[in-house]
Length: 582
Image (cartoon, rainbow, N blue to C red):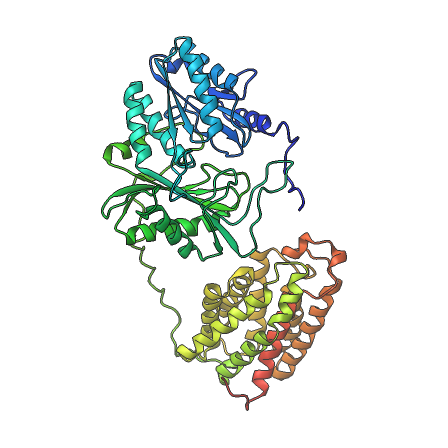
């Protein structure tokens, strides 16, 4: 097993460098000389108030230093990665706050042995010096059905305790009142984590391994073992599993939720989960809680207490009344506290009505060209062709893109077939292209869908009210102009435009009287195929392929190949009256 890569200057200095970077970017923070301690820069504001001090090992960013600010913590003490801070640094921070005039100092500590010992010893020494110091130990982990002597671990719910205590201190509450209220809040709170991957301390290998098809329920924020390994579940099922475990009355660590109660929901990224996945989990949590009759008074979604790069999520639930909710809503300058919307979360919000359709062209418009033959036959030939070359396009696209060109064109083919089953396509060329443009913009996806939509929209506009063969040449030019104007590519850039421009040049012959449209289209198809094959010798000037060295692009552009195939399918459909649509 290899040691994972980390973007650090040194293993030994990574915690100090992270704190220095945070202070550099935040004028409201200061480092305490000689210690891994971050304090508010306006310590004069502490005089006559209760000061709040928290902390723990590094590697949980933005916890804890991200929660220093007016309305939250007065300071934090950091240790090395996943290591409790030293007694000396905790004591130094307490002394600074006492000397700044704080009328009391509350230590908010996560329930880990090292944190309890080091903060506790510093508290005793500070008391012997005359300081009024108290400590609240937060244990919000719902993982273990029968917690051992050590009790419940302190994890992400600690951040909510920071917020409640900070709001009380900012409002001028005394030390006894703050201790009483945050202790009560801690008892009405639970958190559970779920991980898809381990994490690794800089310079070290991962502390454990998960198989590709496994996830772990209930692990700690340092990679400590959870309560169950299971096969990877869809997000909805994973969230349901978490909530069942958190609220199971047979679990001694459970949180009691009754229908009608209000909660603050915190959906916490453990460090390596994508924002897309986090949003999916958050939506699932809201739906599942509402199905239980729980009101989500507030929802916080983001990175609050991480475990380095662990790909996972934790859910925290805090049962709240109006007073507790006001404390959660109170303003703070702490940089890591989110701008929480002042309102409930719900999956039942009424959607904004879709806009009314803009009246289009009359359906009785007449024309020549494809409108004079069964349109379905031509479109079916196009769909069959795109589905036949799906794997080929994907293979070409994997060389320089994300390998989905075939899938994208297959989506277009399926959408066109579905559309034809629902209604006969219009025979009028302008309206046909306009409808296809709308369809591809909605269903095809990717930049290809937009480019085809641009092309067809502009071409449809040119065909409006025209029935002469030259209109098709003009429509081709209009579509290409629109693609170049908004797409930024040009002929020679190794894109679908190379095939389109070659075909367009051949179609210019339609402007000469007496030409055979099918022979002209045949020449256009041949030109497009030659141009598509020639893209293998071009250096990409646009699209994702432009980021790849030209020496690696020894194959035709998939977009150009697709365009040539579509034009060939149109020609085949026009020439083959016996081909029956599926």
